[in-house]
Length: 229
Picture (cartoon, helix red, strand yellow):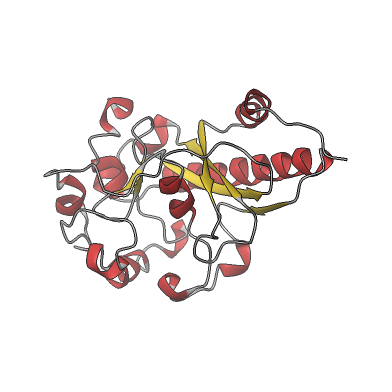
């Protein structure tokens, strides 16, 4: 028998597990590559500001270490939420921040993996920036994401379907790969129109010891600046 699960209960559980912000997206009909459960709970966890020091000049060991920490935090939170909802009688499918079995993927644009940014924008908790970062008005782009799908009937947020970057192009100018196209994101647009993923991948190949993680555009974004000063 199903037991009711209230929003404050979910909020308390997620925040106690290191989630900084979260929202709910409608998943009926299912989002691309999503399981057939009616709701998607999108979770954000924020970088430690100290980990972004110096990243505007290139990737650092501290940034990569915090990137890994956030993946672990989100995966643990997703598993805890899934257990809690399942114990209350609901179905869940957690999607981790980074799927370890996809470590050897050569083409993320065609990897067949659910995009966490899709759930987050549909939940209305942010938009996609000009170098394909997810940008939260609360946290900026200094975050990682994970998603838990469920059939618990939670009230969904209002989707954000247009980028809020306006004329800003700081991430585009800062990108060492020249991957940004200075195009305003709109929901459903082909990624290649927004961002040159292959150029980004080629640049990241220069940093195998840092897991192919850069972060320059994260540090450049004005929404990140107050936390870095």
